[in-house]
Length: 340
Ligand code: TXA
Ligand code: MG
Image (cartoon, rainbow, N blue to C red; front, side, top):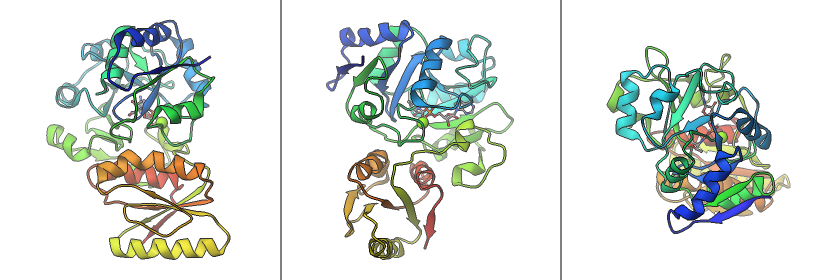
C-alpha cells in the first residue's frame, strides 16, 4: 500500500512525522527536493537501501546520494573532509550540490554501490529538510523514477512509476529546479565534475578554483566510468529522441525539416522547444534556461503520454544551467545529436 500525503502549502510537521516513522522503520518514502523527487530510505539500514534498488530496478553498483539536514553529518559519514568540501558546504548547502568523499565504515557498501566513497548532499527544500530531521537518519535517495526513465519533477510522475510499490509519497508540488544536483568528486587532487546539475559549475569554480570536467559529462565515450551512473541508459522516454543543437536560426529550420521528413515516414512527431513549431504534438519549454530545466523531464514524459514515436528537442546554450540541460537531453537521445 502507498500512502500519499498532500503537502502543497509548505511543511506540515504532524503529517510529515508519519513519513518519518516509515523511513525509520526501514520503509521507502518519496519526497520532493529542490531538484527532483527522491526515493528515500534510511541510508544506514542495508535492507531498506536494498529495497530502493529493487523498486527502481537499479543496478547494485550504481551508488546512492545520502541526504543530510545538518552539516555535522559530513564528518559522521565521510572519513576525511578536505578544506574544499567545507568551503562548498558553507557556500552552497542547503542546495543542488552533491559532494563525493571517502566513506566511513559506518556507511553500508550497499548504499555506496560497493565503493569506498560516499556522495553527500543537503537539499534546499523545506519538506526534504524537515523529513530528514524528523527521521533523524541520513536518507539515501536516488531520483524517484524507474531506472532509465526521465526523473520525476512532480508527485504525479512518482505515482506513475511507483504507486503500489513503495510505502509513502509526499506530494509537495512541482520541484523548482527540475534537473538533479551537480555531483563533484573531491577524493583526488583536483576536483572532478561527475555530473552537471542544478548548481552551475562556474559558481563552484569561483569558490574552489580549478575543476576537471569528466569527458562523459559532454557525451564523450568513457571506458572507465568514474561515476557508475555514467554507464547506464538514462532519462529515456519510450519515444525515440533527436536533439538539434547549434546556431539558433539554423536549429529552427532543421527542426522543421526533420518534422517533415519523419512525418512523411509515418512517424507521429513531437517537438519540445523554446519557440513554437508545427508538429503532431508540441511542448513549449519556456523562454529562459531556468524554465527549460524546470520543464525538461515533464516534457519528455508528457510527449510520451501523448503517444509520439519521435521527439525532436531543441538544444540550449551549454553554459550555466544549460550544461545540465544538454547533458540530460543528449543522454535521453542516446547521443543522437544533429549539429547545425
Ligand atoms: O538532485 C539529486 O541529486 C537527486 C535528488 C533526489 O537529491 N538525486 C539523484 O540521485 O539524482 P541519482 O541516484 O538519480 O543520481 C546520483 C548520481 C549517480 O549518477 C551516481 O552514480 C552518482 O550520483 N554517485 C552517487 N554516489 C557516488 C559515488 N560515491 N561516487 C561517484 N558517483 C556517485
Ligand atoms: Mg537518477
